[in-house]
Length: 145
Image 1 (tube, rainbow, N blue to C red):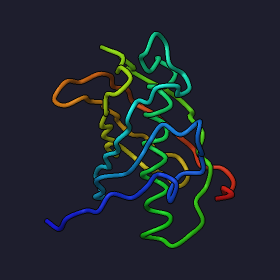
Image 2 (cartoon, helix red, strand yellow):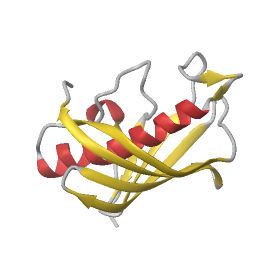
Image 3 (cartoon, helix red, strand yellow):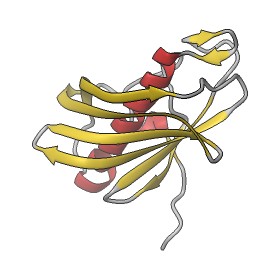
């Protein structure tokens, strides 16, 4: 297995601070992608010094988009497109991460048909599972990066 050099999220996602909930992609293979995000003081969607449920869901969605952005930019060499959440199933939040905590989000491909993708997403802090869900997303127009 070859080493994977982390890629800044700004290279594969159309979102920009302060609405960026992925710092980097740290792993890619055909089955899964893994991202990292440091919950920062003063960041958006915080609740009592914790990343709120909306922020955790946005991290999951942006991590899924990181997979698509990586494929578009580094494998297919095509423009990155904006994605939309079509459905969230089986979503569970066990604990909200606190400011200063780094989370890793793993996105595992379930099915992909044309512009629609279904993935399983698991958010962890160390070995602890913080949240999980199944997301269905669809691709839209080209993003302006």
